[in-house]
Length: 287
View 1: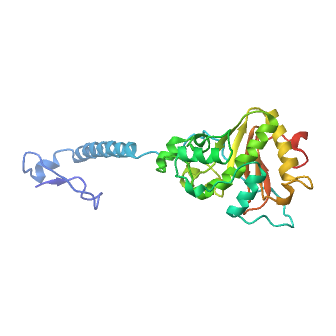
View 2: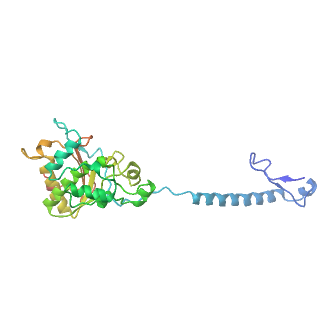
C-alpha cells in the first residue's frame, strides 16, 4: 500500500506516492509519524517551488526606463497660452517653404533628391545655406538604448519633413547671428516609439518632425534670443517681410536655457513654460 500526502488537501495537485521499502502495510505505517513525514515533504517541495519561481522572476526582463539625456518637451494645458488670430496661417506646401526659406536668407532645395542618411542630410543643410548645424547634431539618438529598443539606427525623418526643419533652423541661424553665441540642437524627429521611451509628450510635434529643440550657452543668451524672437517673429513690425506671414502659427516652449520651436502648427499659435523658465523683463512683451 502506498501513502499519498496530498490526497486530502491538494486536489488537482500532481500527486506523488511515497513508498518505503516497496510495500508497507497500513498497520506499520500507523506506527510512523505521518504528519511529521508529510510536513517535511511539503516543506521540501515548497522550497524547491519557491526557488524555481525566484529563478523565473529573475529571468524576466525588467521594463526599461531610460535616462533622459535630452530635454523633453511637454505642453501643460494649465500653462499653455493660445493666441487665435483673424488671419489664417499659410497653407503648408513646398511653395510655402520655398518663399519662407528665401525670406530667411536660405536657398530652396528640393529635399526629395537626397537619400536618407547623415551625409545626404548634411548636403541638404549646406545647400539650404544652413552652416551652423550638422546632420548628426540634429538627427542622432541621444538616448541610444531607446533607439535600439525601437530598432532605429538614427532619427532622420522622411525627406518630406526636411523643408520645415530648414525653415526652423534658418530662424535659429538668424538668432545665432544676433546673439553672436552658439546654439545647439537637442531634438528634432522623435518617432512615437522613441518619444514614448524617453518620456516625450504624447501629442508632441516632434513625433511628426514638426519641431526643433535647442539649448543656449547661458541664460543671458537665452533672454536676448527670446526678446529678439518676440520682436521679429512673434510680433513682427509692420512692413517687415515676416509681417506678411503673421501668423506663422509658431509654437514656443521656454526654459532656462532651452527652447522649443515649431512652425505652421495645426494646433495653433501657442507658448508654454518649462519649470526652469525665469519670468522677467527680457520677454520682450510677448510671453
